[in-house]
Length: 280
Ligand SMILES: Nc1ncnc2c1ncn2[C@@H]1O[C@H](COP(=O)(O)OP(=O)(O)OP(=O)(O)O)[C@@H](O)[C@H]1O
Image (cartoon, rainbow, N blue to C red):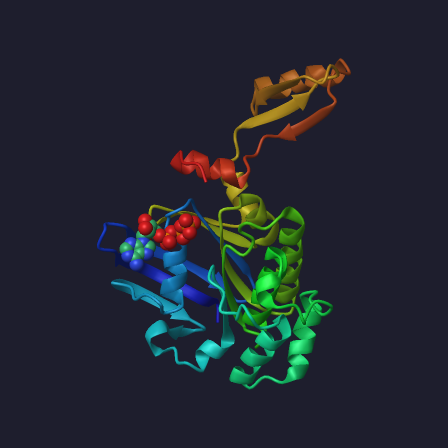
C-alpha cells in the first residue's frame, strides 16, 4: 500500500462560512507527516475528518487502505489519537489511568509497565494525574494514545504550551515510535518542530493546501536566487547566482576576503509567509 492516509478533493463547509476546499494529499506508511498552518486554517478539522468525528461533503478519504466509510471499529484499534482534550481521569494516578484503558482494550499490565518506562514516567507512576506538571500530563496522555501500539497515530499540536526541554522529550518519543513502525500525522504551528521531525509536510491556509513536500525540497523550491558571503570584517554581502555574482565571489576569494559562503534558502516559516503573507 502506498498511502496509509489519502484524501482526494475533500470538501466540507461549516455554517459560519469556513470551508475545506479540494483537499488532496497522501501520507505514506512509516512516515512522519506534518500538517502546518496558522490558527483557524483547518488543521483540527482535517484530523476530525480523518478520525470520523466530522463527515466530508464531497471527495474521498482512504484510511489504512480502505474507504473511510468502510473503516470499522476494529480498524480503529490500529489508530491512536492525541488531541487537545485529554481523556485521562484527573483523580486517578497515571498508572491507574493506563491500567484502566489497558483493561478496556484487553491489553496486559506488562504493556503498561513498558510504556511507562518508554515515556519516562515509571518513577512518577503513582502521581495523581491532576497534580502532574504539564509535561508529565502530556507524556501520560501520549502513553495512553500509544498503549495499544497503533500503526497510525494522530497528534493535534503535541507540544503546544510545553517548555523546550519537555517538547524535546516528546520529539524523542515520537521519533522512537516512528522508528518502531508507527506512521505519524501531526498538526503544529511550530515550523522548527516540523522541520526537525517530519519526512514531509503539508501547509494549509484558509482550508486549502498551498504546499506539500519534504522540508528540504520545499526549501529548494522556494530558494532565493542568492548567495550570502561573510567578509573578513564580519559583514555580509548578498550576490545573485549568476555570472556577475560568481565574479564577485571569485574576487573576494582572491583578495582573501571571503570567510563563509552560503546559499540563501528560506526556512519553513519564511516559505509560509511568502505563500500567504500571514503570521503563525
Ligand atoms: N463545528 C464547527 N462549526 C463551525 N465552524 C467550525 C467548527 N469547527 C471549526 N470551525 C471553524 O473552522 C475553522 C478551522 O478550524 P480548525 O479548528 O480546523 O483550525 P486549526 O487550523 O486547527 O486552528 P488552531 O491552530 O487554532 O487549532 C475556524 O474558523 C473555526 O472557527
